Image (cartoon, rainbow, N blue to C red; front, top):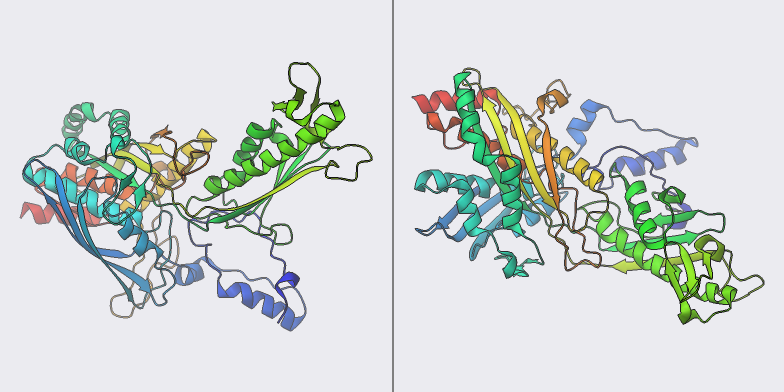
Length: 531
């Protein structure tokens, strides 16, 4: 019963997101209602066991799929029926829709028939989880490719190379209608194979066999469909005090926006990153924005920052011209200074921010500009990953011993942050492939994993050293050449781990294993194959 302008929402550093915080939960409104009802501040705390039962779950997809090849290994067609469990409430169809849209991945498959079904069940509702919908369909396709290789004698790397969309085919329209703007998929696969030392694997397999272990290697390719809210707004102010303030509609959940956006401003305006302050997550300051989801923050945020910075430079030229008694067209800007062409006469950015003394026009300080833009074109980041595992055939226990991946995010503003995103995504992919699963009692429907004692997460000591590399093929549909850079680690992870496990178990005749590939499931698969 209050106008929107009377409501202020402030969101601070609250940890990771990965999809769970993309939606508005009923508790938000209930806390405000309760505070008005009792006339005092109200705090709501969600315990871990409550979160397991009430938070949105993810990845619950069942797929029946077929892949057709000719005698030379060329992919001819893909057909699949994907059934998504929505849980007890229909919260989101995004994972189902996005998964279907990129079901052909980075491969040139001329014909595709996809059927999507969403079903309501007794489980917790499902929604977007990092790389919503893509890891599941990538798992299905990459497993079918490996199965085709084993049944028909194709080399696993060569069959993939033979069917990748070549760079010369860009822009490429996939069979579901998406247009991939650019990319070099063969180079990504080649670099991943080199990082993972695919050529030297058989030596390592033989050594593991002497220790009673079964060693396997797997590869997987993937592509992203990064969308998110298409509108973003930046408000940029250069103050005479020597600071730059950026008000932006994204919201960091651990991505390092304070660092990367400051770098963009430093690149454009020549101001040191430590002079930049970032304001987000406050509805009294942020007029519009799309938050952080679907790898949109840097793609859209950097664009509006750059446009606002260009507007500041244009205004700065006018002010500098007045202060230096020169024509505006004779003023150049570089490395934080406005200089009269062909002379050594110049003035710094923060001096210009003071404005022209006594001027009542737009030549007053500080320097301020707003950029509000809408960009609905998706981006298509892509990844190639190679995973190596050892399996104890007596216990079914899996150890991931090597992992290499190559991510293409277009232009990378901060490679260190991109590597961090890759490492975190890989850990999540390994966790889902080997351990993570929400289990319900089949008779009562009761959730059985109500704590981290019952739900297995990957620990640091269970993960290998990660060898990641960044490829930077500029996107042709983004003004700054950027793609998403936050989801490539997880998307091929499920398939790469599963392919490595099945390769390790091939000597027993195991052709496929479902996820999570727990020790019990692997032990049973070995015993069943031996019979």
